[in-house]
Length: 104
Image (cartoon, rainbow, N blue to C red; front, side, top):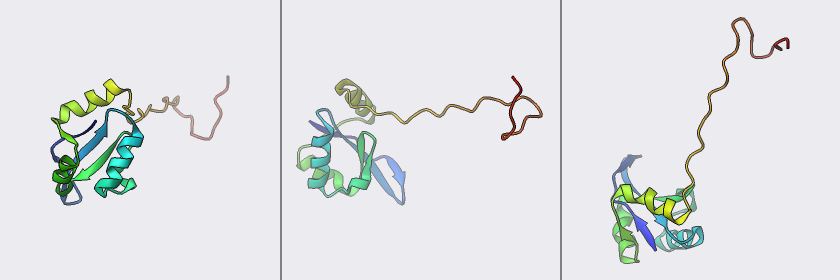
């Protein structure tokens, strides 16, 4: 099944929705292609879909759900790909530059 949330994310002068599948990425890519959403709209585990495409997505069979359900559905299907966490670099001792070796 395919799901999308109401358009609520502003970017580049438009509002955007998130389109997901609870079955597979293959289903998601095929649906996005049928909807006319370019592959560059794919972001790890979902497609960003402009608000003007939402009615067509629903007409083609996607189910409109609240935004909070999108991640729950992805996790439940085992298809969630969160952004990698950035780990801060360890602090350097005072007086040690980035290129120098610390005696050990």
